[in-house]
Image 1: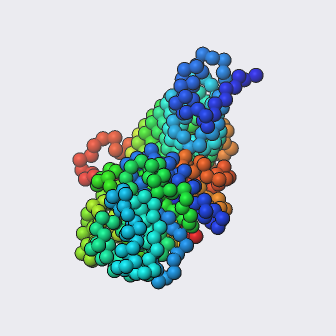
Image 2: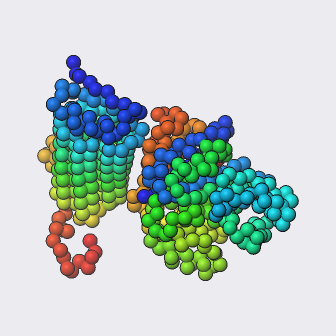
Image 3: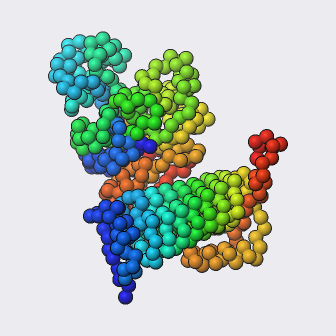
Length: 230
Length: 298
């Protein structure tokens, strides 16, 4: 049976909870941690660095599970800005909606937002995978360098602006593409990739229905004759 | 940074708890704006012949009894007063212009902070939780309230620079963000005879919207016009005698969260200010879209 540790933010501070997660937890036989009464507090379960399942039971604030390594974090509610920012490995799942900058600068691991993600989802992502069950807001995957963003719903304005080598897949409508982002043909490898990520995210969608967006790479080199018009 | 807060109660019985609920929200948002705070509460409107004049005395031990006697003697006999610390509200049939002139001439240390049939505004500097305690915000009753906790990024820290800002009657605005063209807006409005009280960017936005409404726009139409006229970042939360209106600029980089139940609509910069509201676990909690106008009527 899993050994479960329960922590209540009604009586503990976020710092005390995080100190437990960073200090006592690694090397212990605890396999699951449940954190109750998050009440929109910030930075809960940030900086985890061990294989453990963490459940946050309610709506949480900014920077939840930031810099995550190895751990599997689930939030049973909504989250504020920058959930799983700079995630390195492991997974972060949000059962509700996420505010701006979800998984920003993420290097690795999987981030799943079951509801909608707001603007700038995956901004500057560097290798993580993001699966959004709902829609994403404006400027999602802005300057995204590597990794995959899968959007099962719609994408807001300026998707993939100044995109580098990350790939975006959108099932629904794309309001508009950002500078240097372009829609490309879906190939067999793309369908396979989307299909694998949807399975990992446990979201039921037809991978064949997605559109692929990638960089046109026209901004990679300075063009003095472009007169700042891109 | 700054924190914004708004609460409109739909169920009449909740009006008695308005102050209590809003005070918890202000305390939660104190960390976003620890240098000053303000609140505008909307009561049942007084009769059309009367106005509520909300006042702030610059000195802490102000003699409001004496002020009231002078007010009755020199303006109107029907003037009533209610005061707490260096805040007071006078309800009187004296015309606004006449009341302003009297204050300026006879009570120069008292500043008029709001006028209307329903609005009563409080503004002061210091920690928001201390301000809430000083003016007994928990005891306030009304239909809706908006409040602000300020971390100044431009212009001075003073009671006058604290939000909400008001212009005209029964209208106020709180702002999280910064406008980049307040001076050109100000020059435009000043050329139309509109006077400013501070050098704050938010005042320019507030007076712009109120000017549009005086020109015949609804608040919603005024906001639509502001999208092309006001440059900068903003989450604006506005209130009039019977409405609370929320809007974010096109980039929406200043936060806002809304929670709505059958009993109330609550707005805040962050969810943690809403977490203690009744029935929040079943509320419809959402993030407002950029450039979409959200309006709720009492």
